[in-house]
Structures are given as C-alpha cells and as structure tokens.
Amino acid sequence: MSSSLSALLSATFYESGYDHRVEIIHQRDAGALRRLVSLDVTLYDKDGALLATPTVDPRQEILDLGVLVRDATSTQERVMVVLDARYDEAIFPYRPHHYAYFHRRGSTAAPLYYAVNAVLGGVPDRVGATNINNFETYVFRQRPFAETYSLLLGCLARFVPVQAQVFAYYGARRISQDVVLAPKCHTEVQLPAEDGGERLARVEVKALFRLLSYVVGRRAGAGDVVLFDHLFTYAK
Amino acid sequence: MTRRLRSFARRLVGVARHPTYYLPWIVRPGLECALVLSNVEARFKPSCGSGPFRASVVQYDAQGVAAHRYEVALQTSTDAVELPLKAAAGGCGFATVSGDRILSDLYVTLSDGRDYTATHGRGEFVETYPPLTRALLAAACGVASLAGRTIPLFARNQYVYLGPDSRSHVLLMNLSNVTNSIRAVLSTEGRAVGSRLLRLPPMGSHLLDVASLAPGPRPSAAAWRLRLEGNAWFNLYLVGAGPLDLAGPLSLMHVK
Image (cartoon, rainbow over all chains, first blue to last red; front, side, top):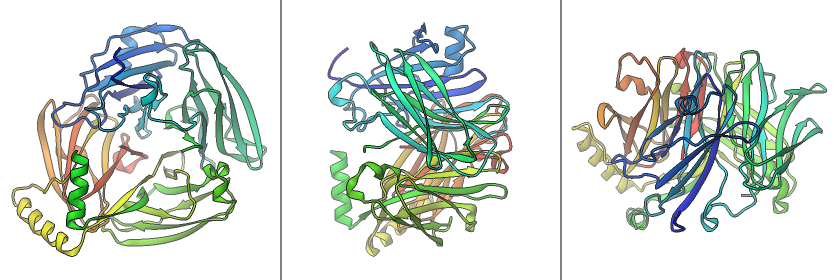
C-alpha cells in the first residue's frame, strides 16, 4: 500500500437483530467524487478468531452490516467489524469518519446514529491524533432509568495483548475491573447501574494502548440498545 | 485554497466568528431534555484549578429568542450537574454554554422517563454579519426565493434514514445573526424527489420532517441523501424517531 495515502482504521460491533448501516463516506459530496481509495473489512468473534474478510467496493455508499455478516458467517454472536480504509488527503480536506445508523427491528426505541470509533493505525505521521488517547471517561445521568450499562471493548493490536482497567464511580467509591484482551478479541464489561445505594456516575478506561470502546445502554429486560456512544479522552 | 478564499471573503464583508459551544434541545409532551454539565477532564489540567467552575447557559427557542437563562456551578472537577431545560416556543432550538475553564464535552439527553439517549455538543462558532452585508444578503435571498432557491454560501450533505419503524428528522440551527434561507433537497439514486425552502430567523431552529419531502410507503429501511444549502452558517443534528415518530422516544446525534 502506498505511503502517500492516509489511513483510517475504525471498528464497530454488529449484533444480530439490528438494522445496522455504516456510511462508507460521511458527507459524500453531491457528485459522489469523494471516495476512499480502498476499504478492507474483517470480521472477528469474541475470541479473536477471524470469521471472514468480505470484499467491499469502496465506491458504494452504505454498508449494510446485517447483510455483510449474514452472507459471510453463520454466527449469531456479536461480531467485531474492522474497517481499514485508505484515503487521499487531496480529496478529503479533513480526516473522514464513518458514521452509522442502527435500530433493533421491531423495537419501540429510537434509532441511534453514531460516529464509528476510529482506533488509529496505518501511516504514523498522519494518524491525526498526537495526544494520549487511551485514557477515556464518560458521565452518566443520575436519576434511575430502566436501563443497564456496559462497555464494549475490542483490541485491534496485531501482536500483543492489551491490559486495561475499567473504573466505575459510585459517589465517592469506585469499583475497578481488570480486562486483558488478546489481539482482535472483544468483550462486554458490565457496569452495574447502582452500588451501595449510589448511582453509576461515570466510568474511566485506562489502557496501555488504544482500545476500541463504546458506552452502551440497554433497555432493562428487552435489551434494546438505547445508548451507544464513544468515550472522551482526558487529553485533548 | 478554497478555505483561504472563503476566509478572505469573510474579512472583506466584515463577518466575525465568535467561538461558541452549543447543544441542541427538543422538548415535547412526555419527552424531557436535560443537559449534563461536567468538567471532569480538568482533573488532569493543573492550570484549571480546582473549582468551582461556573457556566452560563442560554436557551434559544425556534424563533431565535433567548427564552431561558441558567447559571450553573460545578464545585469540583468530578462534579456533574443535570440541567433540565424548560419548554420554549417551537419545541426545539439550541443552547449555548459559556464559562471559564470548562474543558469537557457536554451532553444533551432526551428521556421518556423509561430510558435516555445522549449525544454531545459542539465547540464551533456563531457568525455575525454587519448591517450592510445583512441587507444585501436579505435582498439577494428575496430574489432567489422567488425561484425556490437560496444563495448557497454554505452546503452540507447528509444521509437520512427512512423505514417502516424508524426514521430520521433533521434539527437545523441557524448559527448567525441573519435570516438564513436553507434549501433542503432529498434525493435517492441520483434523482431529487422533494425539496423545501426554509427561513430560519437569526439564531433560530427548525425540526425538518424529512419524510414529508417524499411521502409514500417504505417497506424497508433505506438511506436517502439530503443536501442542505444556506446563505449563512448553519449546522444540524440528526434526530432519530421510532415507530411512534415524534410522539415516542427520540435520539439526537451530532455530525461533523
């Protein structure tokens, strides 16, 4: 791959039952001239096993993850979808993002729209972030809702496992969980909504290397995803 | 090159950009909108001090009127304050947040009481145009509107999603002190299927029902293209609605 191109390494999770569509180019111009040079898609199960490498035409606009996963695998488990793109800076005046829309079929919840987590990679001098980005936080509402909360974490490292600590804060107390993810493994870390009568106030993820990370809120009982957001880095 | 030309043109006509942090809001019957204000990132910035951190919130209604003002104090960097927004004309708009030493991205949440959705605000700018430029823009837009057009100084392309049990709306926000004529064109497969010319007052907002641009049955969810052109700076948030449309739970999402 030419080093004159810039890289965008992003990833998300697909769960069966959801209509989940990824915009290959967000804000494609009216003439559809903005296109990625290439897009490699890989699918991994929770243990890091490569499930498939489906071919995707980077000229298409919307990637239907449901169709993609169903056609390429027989799994009903959660799948980590890695999008490894190359783009020309002359075509994209700023670092592009993939955005995505998803909604559980038949759910009365609102559909969600989100920026696919960019996990960096590719050409080192154009990764677009020079600050520490592996130290993240997220704040939760304090009144009780009929929701459960969790973190979805994935490891995009190629060679070494990543060790992370997840701290959940309840009033003045915090609960920590250690997470070790081998390359391409992923997991869902549950965050109890209450502990000792205190509500979950915020969560922090501290990792040696950048992890794929999303905060997830699900309707209690049904499990429909109603909150799906990236965390915020401490260092901007 | 284009960026430099635009910057030169702004200076030429006297347009000023004022850094502004803003968040969208929607309040409807049965739907609460609350901001979550925090400054947790300041924990690792010794220059920020230890608090209290004060913030002023101005809630603009759909007509661009500063309908409500709130003062908030965060006692420490780990403090988080939930600020329920009041109802105001039009049921939607945006709120600006200003304050010294606030470093964190701030959240806006929508809740039907059962669960909540959240997104964050944007640190951008509001543009102010001098009187002569405002008058010229108004005259030019008046002429263009006769043909259902605007003066397309700013343009955005956004995918929207329409299906049998979920759909997108778009919250448009005029981030300027001039009336903004925004033309929305919905298209699919390279063919325009509907358009509308909207007039947003200075600092005003509009919740665009995208589906109304192309009425008809939708057996399966699909992405459509929406192109927006305006005569002044504007931005948008995507609003997600489920099978109950605007009468049910909603989500908000920023876009770049």
